[in-house]
Length: 222
Image 1 (cartoon, rainbow, N blue to C red):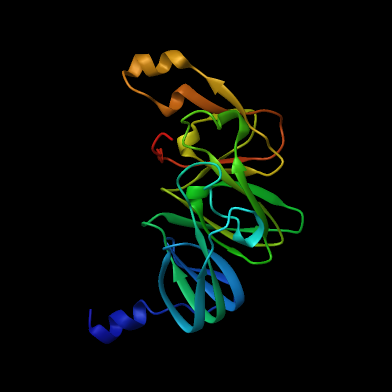
Image 2 (cartoon, helix red, strand yellow):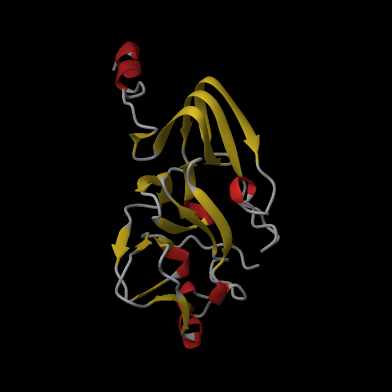
C-alpha cells in the first residue's frame, strides 16, 4: 500500500458523536467541554485540550482513587477544552454504553475507560468481598445521563440473574443489582492453587444483567 493510501485508509472517521469508535480498540472522544478518562489511556489528541489529574478519594469528579480502600490507586484524569482525544487501554475491546437519566451501572475499576462529565459516580468495594482476595473488587457506580466507555478482553457475554460469576472475569452489572458472595473453598485444593472460582459473585433475582469477559483479570492479593 502506498503511503498516501495508508494515511487515507487509517485517518480518523467523520462523525458527530461525543464518543465514537475509530476501531474496536480505539475511542475518539470529541471534546467541547470536559470528559473523564482513565489515566494513561490517551494515545493522541488534537485541538486545544488540557489534562488534569485527579487525586482525591472523597467522591464526585475527584473520587476515582481507591486509596482509602486499598493501598493501590486507580486514578483518572479530566480532559478539558475543544478537540479530539484518542484513548485506548492495552488493546482491550471498547464498549460504548449510553445511560439514560436515572440508569446506573456498577463497573470494575480496571474496566473504566471514559465517561462524560454529565455522568455522576461514586466508588467503593463490593461489601461481601472487601476482606477477600476476589480481585479486589473496587467498583465505580455510574449514573446517567451520558455515555460510558468500558473495556473487555475479547467479546463480552451478558448474563441475566440468577447467575454466579468469577470475580476476576466480571466487568460490570446493572446498578440495581447487589451481588452476594458464594464460596467453594475445596476448589482451590482441587486445582492445587488459589483460584478465582473459589469465591463467586452471586446475583439473585430476575432483573438486570451482568457483563463478563472471556478472561480472568487477576489482581495482586491485597
